[in-house]
Amino acid sequence: MVSLLSEERILAEIDQPLDQAVQAFRLELRGPLSNSSFNEVVGEFIRHVYQMGLRLPRRLSKLEALTEAVFLLQRYYQGGYTEGYDGALLDAMDGNLEGLELVLSRVGESLKEIERNKYVNWVFADHVDRLDWEARRRLLIAYLDQYGDFLPAKLRELDPARLVDHFHALIINHVSSINLLKQVLRVK
Image (tube, rainbow, N blue to C red):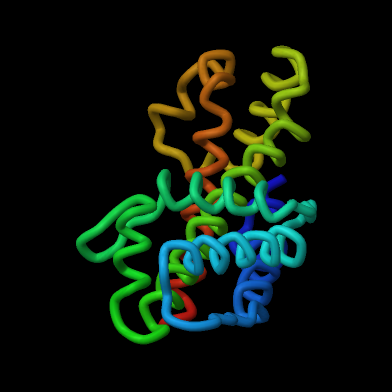
């Protein structure tokens, strides 16, 4: 399970396909950017990325894609001084095409974060959450046997039954530590 949550695996499964889909999108504007043309572009962008960049591709109608785009912008868009759909529209109108490209890039980054979270949740649902409590306790004991030396003494001294509900956090922190260590070793 730890290998499924490694940074390399998540990059390969989530980030790279999304990055490729974002880069492959061809921005086509007919005339100056307006509210209507902005909606058309972000809708087409979402249609393209959902079909080409997701682990489970989705085919959206134009209306579904626009609805999804507006939702994503409203919920996740953070510009330099703006936020939400209206902020994205203002940022897109700023400059030539760079403003619009920046908005699409930020939407792509938001999608990566969303898809990474879905992937991590899937890993836990598939490997841990579906197990009964006793099986999760045994899994935790196996984890502690293998990696317990890396944990603080206070955690090692606890009854494993008390840690079962914190298994997700243990694994996420474990994987984060491994990823950080890999980064530090790569830098040197």
